[in-house]
Image (cartoon, rainbow, N blue to C red; front, side, top):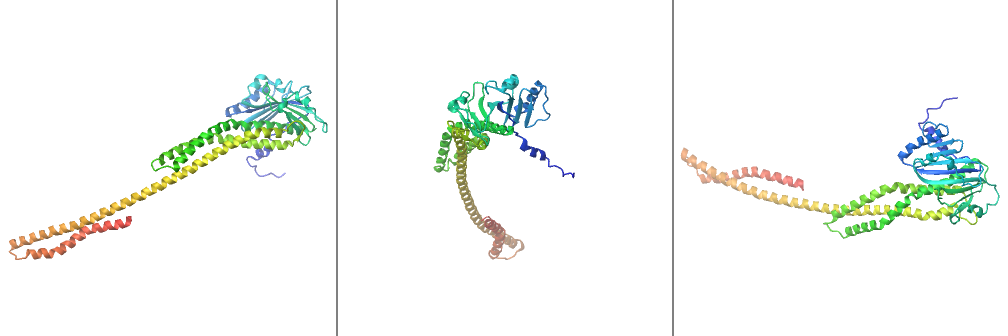
Length: 434
């Protein structure tokens, strides 16, 4: 045998995923007690140790290493444990003849203190009786079935290719359990187990799907006030002035933060609800029900009774999304208006600064010209004083007036060169800024 290349790290785990949720092999008559518990992280950590306690009571050893599923035969009953993402379900199975499928349930054979201490909160609990039927036989009269159920909510049908009969009333009894009765016409234990698993999936997933209903109802009760608050803000935006836009934006930001917090708290539950409603519809379709006269099918009963709850959850989620979109649009509109106003203010400020600079430049030019005149006047006078002093000291006969007149152009040119240079640099800087 030639060796294979090294396995992908998760090859076996991925391959065994299809074997994770195996069907319980049921050979009627069988009684089952089913419990689905919601568990958090802390409770999930205690499950395996709790199962080890049960095994020790019956002199058995729990397999090492925690797993998603567990099948054990403890003598008095069989135990199947399935660990899902947010819930764990326990199925206790006992084979044997019985007169009343619900008189002595399997949980009576489970240690009471151990059962009561199961980690988690009970979401679903059901007793199931599986009795043998014969394919092609007429179904039992409803009077024979009604003694086990509430007739006003009794539902039943022929299910699957074997046309096995299934009944329930979706009622929780005084002992905390609901009831299912299955008249199995199939001779295949796996087919009976598959049918029962679908029934229990429907019951479990419908409860999980409805977990968002209280939150949805609470949110829908608050929605009109939130909608009115947003409408008030948007009306203020449409009629707003420059003075209150900043305040409106702050109010809108606070409102958006509150809504986003609400969405983050409920988004997971609403997403899970949509997924669970889909699973319920899928499992009902897999039942392939054929109606019986006088009572609704599982699908007909649940679809009619759960549709308002489903619509409520969907409406709450859509309303939240609509409010979020409206807030985003109002925020963008308000920010755009504020940005446009600020841009105009910046342009006006730059224009005012430019005008002020030009005024300063012209003033500087005027001062520069005066400076040239003053510099020329005093410099020419100084030259005249020097010429007169030379006439006295050296007995020259220079015409001081002529000397002063001749020096005026040269002095003026020097003054213009020194002072005008600064003015020219200012002009160049002005053109660069413009």
